[in-house]
Length: 403
Ligand SMILES: Cc1ncc(COP(=O)(O)O)c(C=O)c1O
Image (cartoon, protein in one colour):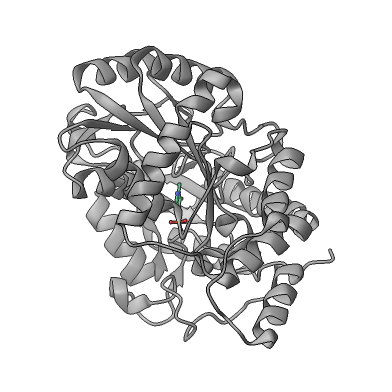
């Protein structure tokens, strides 16, 4: 393989929040498989472009040029058959920042904002922090651990709670579904019917595995494009989260102006030059690296599947997308708090607690249990050796191997 994903790269002492073990009171030697960044180096083409910029040595105020727009649009055209136009672009330091801007700029206090729990926790926090009403359409898990959308409930929530904005996670973090075109069309029809604006967070779009295909929500029809903000970023794909760059596409001029107005009110102005340079280099030259990475992640999923199949008490359904494994620990009979403590303190493995992806609003519609409880999210974008060690440690404290 021309790219090295196997080597362990020391990240302690590099300002990494993933490796800030003290943050969660984890003992020395803990393996952090929680927050969604990868333990792999970004592709060489990105490092080279950043080195060149660093050697230039001037880091003045910067803005994207035509080559930047062409690189981003070219990526989406090639990989997804969708070409965003230059005047749809809005840059943001990150998608979470853009979420705060969108919720503030496009809704009023008290308006309903709809999410599908369990979901990436900032979706829940942004709605609450800004005094909007958090409305939950709970995802339903079948007996095989596959999650699906309850469309009747989706429509009911919109009608019952004056929903103005829907925050879509596509592909979905943490349940690792890649929504099918039919599912997305059904959601889109309901949003069109009720005039709901959609913030479609597609940051995980590049992590889609064989047998599945990511559809850009906004590409489904002109009518849907008119009510959608598409949020993308090179940060998950090429491990650039610390460079703070994301690209939003807003075809509807009114929406775009409302978003831009709020962006300015936030006090935000230009993007950082290193993020712009890295994004362009990645989209221009990173395809081969990404394809190799996807194959490597496929092998890590094999290892997870193999481990789960021979381990009592856990269930694991192979992700359709993302590099986040959603592991069902309910068979161990351990409560969430006990499991978390055991994993951190005894196994020395730091995962995300499933219940943190749900809220009390979601629990009310989920028989009292927080959506996601009983599960753990495991980031498998790490060298295979790290993953193998983490899985062995988990088995040693929670469960017995099948004979
Ligand atoms: C669905 C989703 N959206 C957004 C983000 C973070 O985006 P950003 O770093 O651009 O704020 C993440 C990170 O894990 C994510 O999973």
